Amino acid sequence: MSGDVESLYTDGITARKGAFTQQWADQLGEDVDRAFEEARSRPGGAVGRGPNRYYVEIHPEQIRGFVDLVDHPWVRSLCTATLGPDYRIVELGFDVPLEGAVNQPWHRDFPMPEETRRERRLTSLAFNVTTVDTEEDMGPFEIAPGTQWDDSEEFEHGMFPPRSHYGRYAERAVRKYPKRGDISARTALTVHRGTTNHSAKPRPVLVLGVDGPEATNGDRHDTAVTRAYWEALPDRVRRHLDCPIVDELTPVTQKHTIEGLVMGDA
Image (tube, rainbow, N blue to C red; front, top):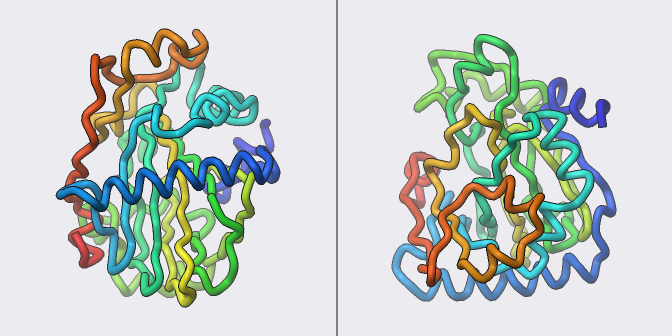
């Protein structure tokens, strides 16, 4: 595990190949497709993150494999080693680049926290789980390793580097081609982007957001669980699940974000 933590601090990303079976990933794909169809059927159900690219936040109960994911030994161990024993699961959602999705501007997902700036310490993680085998023409995720420490007043909203910085990211850029069953973990501070989807195939990716005790990303999310679901969860999952317990779930209305505005399709 120390090697994975080291990778997060050096490259900003690490992965566990074959963490789940392809069948498990296919089931996840069914759940994501169902949630995406439901979200697009109502106002505010999906938010744009660029042309033909959507983000949808969901509730844990919408994913049959939620406990499998958050209770996977690699996920638990990496969260504990990086964020400490009191880490909190604060976000569950998915990104879907469809046919016609274009290159996003290089960005990080939120401004650099003071703890990271002062102490070079990571305070949150984003886990990504693909529901398809990623191919070159499907608009793979692109990341610029080592850029989680980039700190410039020129970053718009603390998240979007100016075009004058793009050469640095292009030189470092690595495209990722995860397969069904793989999990990756990254600090969302590492500068990255989705690329152009030249195919007719969507490329859905589940996103699991985890905060350390001092992080505040949970303030931006609306994940909830019903009482019956909560009571059926293992204790060690409940200990880390930071969300309201409700009598009845309300479909999440997505927030129109800075990301969506800057990427031109909020």
